[in-house]
Image (cartoon, rainbow, N blue to C red; front, side, top):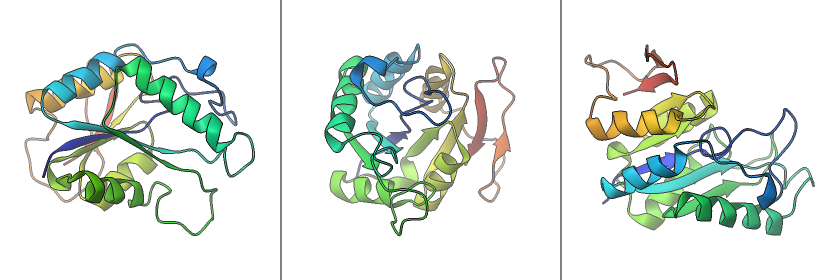
Length: 187
């Protein structure tokens, strides 16, 4: 069993599109600064890096599966590689277990890749990312959708200081970061 870092895509690896918009083509992908370096650091530290992202633009007919695959391939190339990517293409309200905050994407990845969920992390920019990580049994980091947030999170994980000094039931715990890029940690 291996530890992993599950990564939300939009707002964690690449810039968020405008409200109501979706990243629908490779040309629209703009990595957040520090994202590729963070993924490389995590992989060198022994973590599998797995994208886990809701992409309901497919269900809404705003993009095709082929367009999603092209965007995914471009993100992977810009980052320098990830170990896998899992996407939920269902719409809100559809019966599925993979749309975050459900844990299905993470659980499927864990089964297919031999991931130790208790030793793993979920990093994302929304509460649904945190909830999915908690539901899967991971520790979580919620970050601001800004440059270098993922890099700050990666440094914290690798340094081992991304855990509060106290033991508490899973809950969002505020973290006061000088740059305020890490919003919360769930141990």
